[in-house]
Image (cartoon, rainbow, N blue to C red; front, side):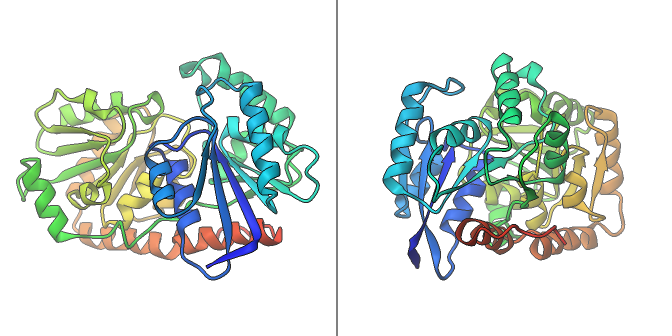
Length: 368
């Protein structure tokens, strides 16, 4: 299944739970003829996706750098690994990996380098000076890679405004596994029984780590205003958000496709920073009605199959959920939501675009 003459290295900050890590894993593990031979390098340690990749036989290298603290030791180790593998292309994912990959790959004339942008308007005030400095340095060096690949049009626009001036700047939307995320009546009944949710109760699902950008402050206000709805929160750190009787704060789960199947609405309450939201698209693929904030490419993902409201407004999100619940065409909208993801954001489209770029150096066209 692999092409030994087309080795591709992926460099990412870490391999824990997250959207970029999931997209990388779907890309690397996708079954297709003449797939490039992958090597995945985590600048920090292992984690959930490191185990998934290793179990599938993919070479995973961890450099054990302290998160957010680039070092000369890690840079030297990355440089050695790139020269050992001698890939035709290196794809980096997220700011620190972008920066360190370009520095480590300098002088490798036979290797093409591509940066990956996975976010849009990140508010550096929530994350300290390090993020701000790293983004400024990335903008300054953005002409170094052969191309910069954003996963959203919002991310492309925001970074151009930040001063990114790459040789080529393209968008490859995330690919969603619509076989894994699909309507599933058995999982729906099982998860509802496990969490003591009545079969007749309408359920909101939110799949996001507990992070300032995800807007859980807003979402909990919404949950308080809508006691007849049950809210399932799944993602790293969400276990700390318990407290309301209609909220099930589940923490990190490895069965998010089953959690999603138990729902009726997929809700993203993000305040800022999203590029292409996997959780919105995965919920839609599972046949859930999307009610989401207007952050990143949410409007591109949802289209006319759901509702997009202003961020940071509990009132707007509450009103949209109430109105959606009263819609006579609710079922038709959820069917249309799934169809939109299957038609526009299939894993195969993402894989085809990245393979063309990595193996042949062909830039992908615009999303259509």
